[in-house]
Amino acid sequence: MNEKDKEKNEKIKKMSTSFNILSGDSTDGHGGYGVGTLNLNNITPVFVDVEGGEAFVDMGALHARSAVEKRIKFLKEKEAVPNGNLFWLVWVTVEPMEGGPAYVGVTACEMIVDREIRRGYKSMPEHVNNMDKSLKRKIVVSQMDDKGKAILKDFLQTFDEGMWERADAQLNEDLTSS
Image (cartoon, rainbow, N blue to C red):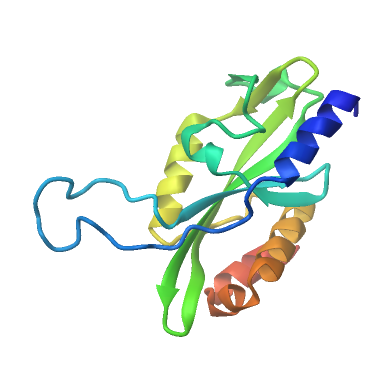
C-alpha cells in the first residue's frame, strides 16, 4: 500500500462512527404531502474492508459519495477489476424496540475497488434493492465471505452490545461462519 492509500485509510478511520436512529417520522398519520417517501433516518451504511480487517461507518454511501467510492469509475463486470480489494457495503437499519434500539435490517452488497487503476465493480441495482430490503427489516448477509462476516459481527457487537442482543437471532446465525 502506498503513502497516498495509507493517508486515505486514516481519513476513513477518523469519520463518524455512529448509527442513525429514527428521530420521528414527519409523514406519520397525516396522509398529506410526502407520504410514501423513503425515510433514511434509521439506516446507516457500514463498510467492511476485508483486506484491511476493519469495518467503519461512512454516511456518504447514502448518495454513492463515500470515501471508498470517490474518484473510482465503477464498471458492470467483476472481471474488469481482477486486482481490486473486496469491500462489503452493509446497510444497517436500527429501530427503537422495547428496551432500546436494535439492529432490525442488515443487508450486504459486494464492492471491488482497485485504487491503482481507479476502477471498481458494484451493482447499483443490488445496492438500491438491498437498501430497500434493510429498511423492510430483512437480513441478507449469507453471500458474504467468512472473513467479512466475522469483521461485521465483531463491529456490530462491539459498537453497541445492547443493540446486538436485541437484534433478531437470525442475524447472529447468518453472521456465524459456516
